[in-house]
Structures are given as structure tokens and as C-alpha cells.
Image 1 (tube, rainbow, N blue to C red):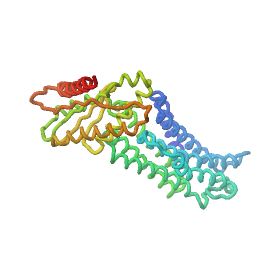
Image 2: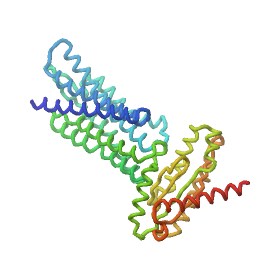
Image 3: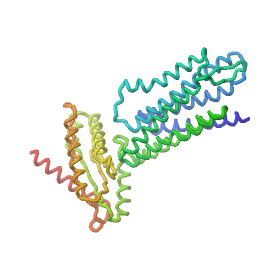
Image 4: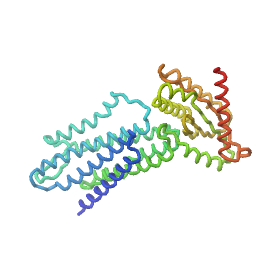
Length: 384
């Protein structure tokens, strides 16, 4: 009866994962990171089916039952390693989309998975990972811990990367996302540990399913507040955040609003096309993240080719430091870019919030906007 209880848990987890799959497919069908997540979800469904099938086949002696039990368990090991490997790639794609990982690095990352696949298949003749005894029952082999090492090795690596990125991330929402990706490991560790300590418990993959649910809920909540192209906060979240900061302003720190507009962005689209224009927006977002990564700042895509930064600071010198860092970042980008790629220059305006003269956040925005356009017109006049 105990085993049937755990089989019911597996069936519940499968139902939960299928709901997540169809919901993700409806909300973000084309995003590469979402497709990777859906693949992980479907493979988790498959491994749960293998889990159920393995227990149902134990002690059965119908024709082909023994061969089927071998196949089910081999696929179980293959799937468990593949899911963990894909989870690591998902985390990398989710939080480090701009980083290039070399083929050599991918080769070394995939070695543990390939080893698990080979050893699993070889167990038919060697019994390294598992064997099927005369009673048609699964028995652990001398190397059965290899699956645990490979599976949790990938998941631990993903958690470490997420934690490292969380410490460096500028955006609050991105830090929260990294935290959830880091905490993903908690439930599988608990379920896997119990499964190892007490053979017969089916808790590992249901706990993985629950972790996937938590990550998916966080992904959905971020779609409300983040710009899908740049990964920065979107305009709606910016408006809410700025209004809250203005309403709760206590004067203990300076509240500075920067508005930044990419110069000649229309000509970038006209000359290079909208795909290159989108890439320019992404590069601009990365530039801002690099400048403000060590500062108490809120970054957002304000609209079109405009960006905004809400900065808390104590001295005017910090504003000058930001402007200097922005200029240095733009010069470095111009130096590093390909000769066929468009250049990126910002017109920048900023304002300090003063509740004595600014009755609303709209007036705060207008003050920064006016200064930005004064700088833009000054540049245009100089260029003539």
C-alpha cells in the first residue's frame, strides 16, 4: 500500500507538470529559454513515468517483462542525467544570455552526462549501476551513486552560478530570479536524500516537479515587470517604483533620475535593419548594467530607445562619477565594436527630486526629460 501511495504522488506531479507545460506554451511559445524550460518539464514527466513503470513491473513475469524492466531503468538513468544537464544550461541561458560559452567548455560540461549514459547501458552486462534479480526486482549496483553524483553535480553547479550572479546583479527582479534558481536545489536534495536513505521512497522527482513549479511562477511574475527584449524593468514597473519612491521620500538620501536616449537610433534601424536595432538596445542595456552594477540603482527601459535609471546617492560627486563612467563605457564600446556595427551614444539628462518644487513623479520625469533634450539639441547644433 505504501508504494501505491507514492505512485499517486508521481501521478499528481505528472499532472502538475503537464499544466505547467501547456501554460508556458501559451504564454511564451517562441522564447528560447522558455522552450528549454518546457523540454525539462516534458523530460521530467518521462522520468516520472519510468519511475511508475519500474515499480509496476517489479515481480511481474509476463512475456517481455524482464526486458522491459531493463529498458525502463536504463531510460530512467539517462533521463535523470539529461534533466540535470539541461537545468544547468537553462540557468546559464536565463541569467547569462550575453555570455559566450566555448565548445570546449561544453565538451567538459557534458562529460559526466555521457559517462552516466554509457555506464547505464553497460549495466545490462556488468550490473554497475543496477541489475534485475531472478525475482524481476531492481537491485542497486556498486556504482549506483554515479547517478546521484552526476545529477546533483549539475544542479549544485547551477545553484552556485545563480548565487554568484545574484551577488552581482543590479536589478532587484533579477536578484529574486537568481535566488529562486539557487533555491531550486533545496527540495530535490531533501527528496533525493530521503530516497537514498530509505530505498523504496519515490520522492526525488516529485520534489523536482515542485521546484519547477516555483521557478515557473517566478518566471510568470517577471513577465509582468520586465522588458522582454532587454531584460530591464519595463515602463509600467518604472512608473510604479518611481511613484512609490517619491511618495515615501524622507530626504535622507538624494533621489536622482537619469533619462538616456540613444542618439540617431532611427538611422540605425534604417541603415542596419530592425534586428540590428534590437541588438543595439540589448547592448545599451548591458552597458547600463555594467555601469550601475555596484550602485543602488533601478534600471528600466523607458520606451523605444529611451532608458531610465533611478539612483540613490549621498553626494553630488556620485552623480559626476556616474556620468564619467557612462562616458567611459560608451568610449570602450566604440573601441571594441566591429567596424560594420553601429555606434552607441546616449543623450543624458538627470534631475534631483525635490518635493518642495515637484508635486508629482511626472514633474520629476519632466525635469530630467528637459535636460536630456537640451543635451541632444546641443549635440545636434555642434554636429552642424
